[in-house]
Amino acid sequence: MSSDFFSKNSFEKFDLPLNLNIDLEDLEQRYFKAQHHYHPDRLRTSNISSENTITDYAAAFNEAYQILKDPLKRADHLLKCLGWLVSDETLGSKQDPHLLTFMMELNEKIEGAITEEEKKQLESFLENEIHHSWQALENSIDKQDKDMALTCFMKLKYLHRLHLNLK
Image (cartoon, rainbow, N blue to C red; front, side, top):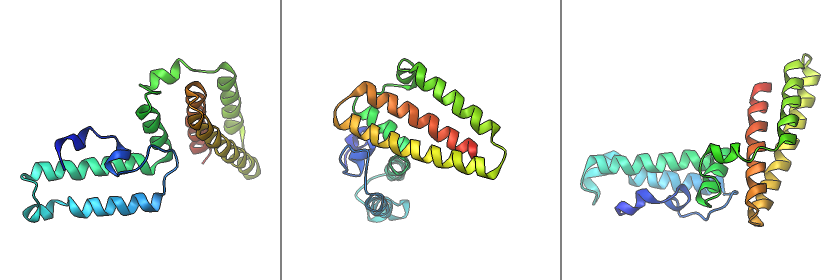
């Protein structure tokens, strides 16, 4: 591997296409293979010259794996690779007032949920919204609709946060 490895995005490090949906089992196998190959104990048998360098490769693969195995981090990374998301400020400039109102109302419902039945209904609703938002994000990426993709991603981030708050 050459030094340009470190300038590759997480998809490229594992030789995967830029895609929201990836085979997580395949990713895991690629990660374990890289982890085995670049383990610091293998330094003596490696053509890599220094312990720092092999440690850097191992850390880079680990970081890329952590990004790709998490759906929200993967979506964030993909949008950045596409040049659609430069920073969280990009999302801030795309805030839809209807979406913000919807999220505030949903948050109030979550805070007001007392019974297990209310919480289960909200959890089911959130899971359904997350599923539909993922589909919308995939479709907007396929159609090269940057604005819709950013709106869907922002909605997914909110929904994920609310889902965590519910639990």
